[in-house]
Image (cartoon, rainbow, N blue to C red; front, top):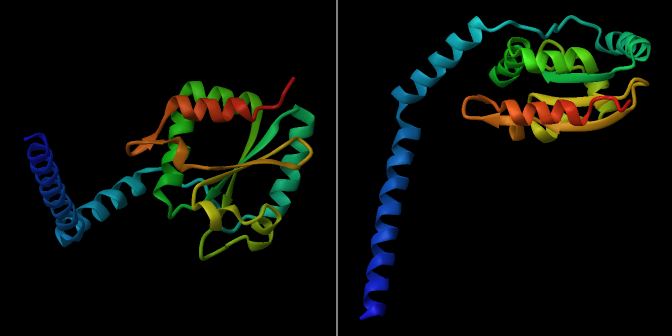
Length: 181
């Protein structure tokens, strides 16, 4: 009797799982849903500040940051991505509008938005850091010590939560790579 009940339960579970999967696939393929998501993302992107400058001389900027970091005894936080990347823009907005995070960043880092876009891929600069965007996607964070030595590369998805970022995980990341006194 137990074997029959177990088989029935497993068959029922698999049937419901298949139906749920089929429903999920329908939602993914529905052009109206896809179009609505694209429109919502475009509207959100339009409202967010655009911190990446495709015309910047990233190598020269980073060299100046190293001078500044030495003077201020701070590390350098490079947020690599582009104004095309909604997750890059969301992260920037999250840090800039969350006083607790902004305080940690301002105290411990000189911050730079390293552009990656069709206009300027900054290939030479990215190659110095092992091309982390190719491996992790964007945004990706490159942490340098005050002398410009790379000490960490952080993918961003581990900091995500829902359609944004986790305050606790982001605080932990920034505190972990702050300069040691």
